[in-house]
Length: 503
Image (cartoon, rainbow, N blue to C red):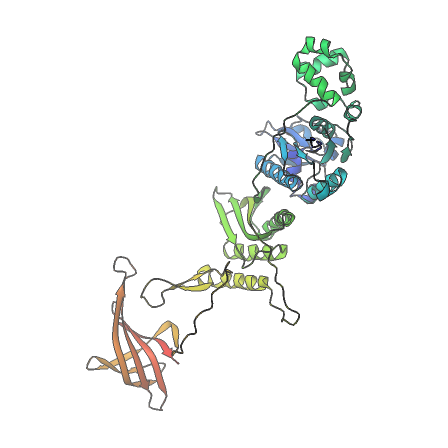
């Protein structure tokens, strides 16, 4: 049995602390920026952009030293945004290979993809690498990719300080590709770097040329391992990871935000990222939850869920805006987090002569506007509650059932009652304990037929205790107008009301 040829693609993203912050701040991507780490006043530069480096900034500079340079944007390091960025890049890499190994780095992101056998899906390795970088660029991450048949050679070439985006090393030519690279790509310890500096060894080619027995006698097995890395001959046991797919974006604001329009500008950028990630997996957003970290230490959480999953950015933005308008946060906002639940994209196949259906998003926006006026509890689908109390129902959000509905049996014709909300009070006279006449809407009615009374009561164990006496009446006014209605007597409050009219 022939062994499958190995081929690896190393994805390397430099300056991850800066890239994690700038991916959701597009207005700062073209400006010199530095990221400060630590507690004031002992903050130092831990990450910076290329333009900031060209102006004279470097690692370890203090806030005072950075302030002496004009035109540099200063950002505070966010470990939570870095963690989110790592998950996003790892998730993107997983779309091109099921076998991905992450190598932890403090100031950068590095992972290796096993792309053996993917030519039929994504084309040659160079095409796969460019498509991967294009996908990352859409997510706001800049990186480079090195492809090699040796795991460590791909890692070393990707970390080399060369202006490259994609580099493919042909098989058996790893040693030639590694020869001009500096020793810094091997992550040497301080003692090892000092030793090689005293020997005059500056490149991997010079290290690979050293005799192996003498190198082992001076550095032990570590020296043998370093020589194998320099020659592109080191072996590796691939350890793939399986990250969970979560649609989450988080952004810590540079200053507290109180205006809703400013918050929506931030939410728009985050929604774009969520939709791009969902579209890459042929999914749509079924619901979006926004969590606002407030200045008073509390959190404000709202969730919007339309009738059908969709990837319409403007539609989601409108729903979030209407929901936050009706349920505004009670303090200034320090951080924003969006969590989305994925769902299958909705496709409707219409016939050639089928009339055009209204867009579901219009219904969702209309319902959101109504909820902002009358309240969430007054909009939705009516569901009867398990009680004999009048008006015993509640409103639930509209949802499209997952299964097909069974055909309902044909209903028999019954008289309909128009419920009056609220019930209208009336003045009633009695004859032998039965209603004889009443005044309703400035008109006097004489009762011709009275059916009842029907007594109901319940919930004696709570503050919502109720007791009612119901009469169904047929009454006539002096001008001949007939009224068929439901007369209710609130026994606890001794109030008579017309609760409804029969058609």
